[in-house]
Image 1 (tube, rainbow, N blue to C red):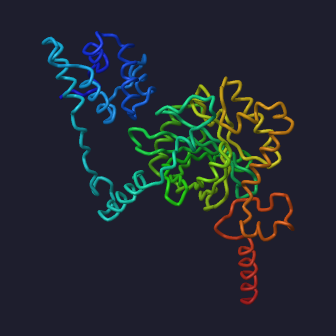
Image 2: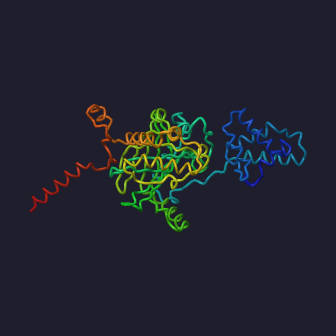
Length: 412
């Protein structure tokens, strides 16, 4: 049986239903999708007719085209040649999906118990039917009423800020992705780079899935990979190094975001992360500034264009202005909701960029909520708790050092 992609499905449909008119067929498919409230969007349909078209091979696309074929074309009135085309399309569109070969423990090198546990964990994480009905598109892909709606293959871009263990501020780049054929879940990528003066070789990426839970929160769960710097002269060698790094995760990373926080502060909201510093686990608060989506910006952007770095707190406002200016030179159209409003204000350079930097720092303050509430009146308005929380408290380290010194003295 030939593959569906090897046939000009759209051309055959046009010949059967609309006398060969592709534009007429496209509008008919869009109208049918809207009338039937189909999950197939106008954007998806238009991609089937593009100069470099996508093939409607997914299950829901084939189901949609099969229903359209039955509704729009009467087989009894076709010529012999067209009947053959009709039957061929009908067979292809109703062909059951190919069953993938089951992975065995021998092929993975894992024990049967580990493999079964992995399947169970993967099933729970990817089963979106058991989750809250909060919309990932509305929460992570919406920019503004003026921006186009997010397409099925859209990406959404964020600047992610968090404290480093040193007390400086890490500026990372995070990308949210819609479900794809290879990953049936919303997913994310993050890119960060160490301070050039201390850790110039530290270039890390994270890849994982976005899950949502009935306790009104999102959990980003993925692996951290150590990468060679991408500022190399040999791009092909860099690709090889990246592929090798993906085979050996360095650590796991989690990001947590509350539904209510996103609703109240859409475009600039806070969260919490558990990740890895240079070599030790850390927990710290994060701030997410929405830059926009491919649809709203009118172009795609990368981590190189936003400038990954480690900042002193007083430099965040200046860096915000420089980032916006770089994106404007790239002809980006509409930013995320918050950045769009502030960056277009007449006092962006003089006032609002500084206010946004202060708001980001306030979100990053790692002072416990109990302490903040208890001492609200007596606390300084400065951002008190700077720096990620490591696995070993500094006071404990000092006590251990002192005890170690005393122990040595007692032995002499």
